[in-house]
Image 1 (cartoon, one colour):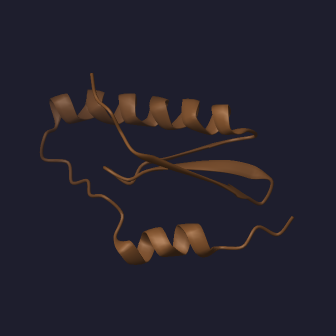
Image 2: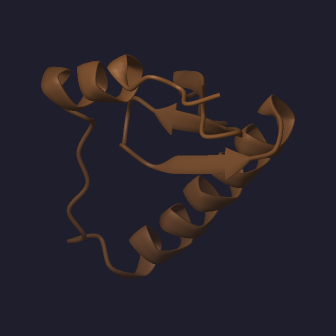
Image 3: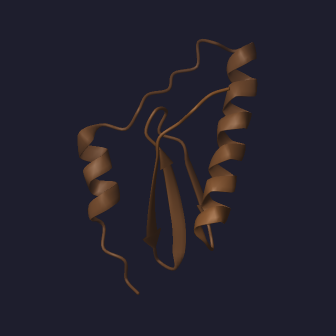
Amino acid sequence: MYFYTTVLRKSAGYWVALCLENGLVGQGINQEGAIKQLKEAIASFLEVYKIEPDIYYAPPTIEELHEFLAVEDTE
């Protein structure tokens, strides 16, 4: 079983979940929806990674994380 660190924030009326280990994101109308989409993205990525282990992935940089957290919600 894998465990991931996730950051959630609201943006433009949607919730966005960012995985700090691999930089994947999910989006939903609520927090649960965003986390569900992120889990699906991670599962899809891991399936492809089994076949193509040379696929590059990386956690977000500090600058990218700062931008993710600093963008103001327009609502």
